[in-house]
Image 1 (cartoon, rainbow, N blue to C red):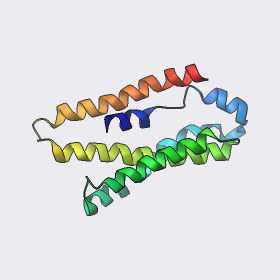
Image 2 (spheres, one colour):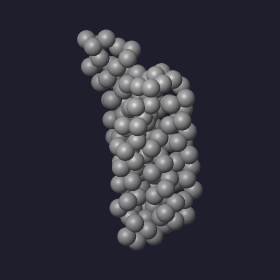
Image 3 (spheres, rainbow, N blue to C red):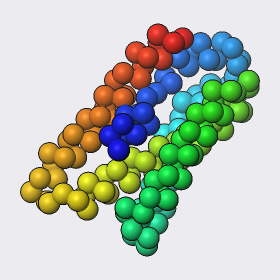
Image 4 (cartoon, helix red, strand yellow):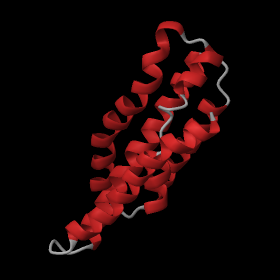
Length: 142
């Protein structure tokens, strides 16, 4: 689960100027970056409700969000215009938001309140590591 959180935290911010040069998004440059965060935050209340209804360890919920993230990565990776890139990044955000929330909820369920901070620190550190390494990898690939 930490690896999934790490992957979901990799970002496109450093590579965005190179992407913009190829896609020529014009005034759609900013939504390419912001649509991911918007979708990531919008999906979380609904996913939390689904987890309350069906159980947090129900594998289908996590599998759907991993598939959404992979689908969004494919759409964004194959984008040949700004609209496709925005669509891909939005789908990625929907997947990433669900992944991050489910990982945290599973930790809440499996770990006692006394040890919860330590385990959440480990899980969220991997996500932060992804956010740190993402720009480096993006810059190297760009």
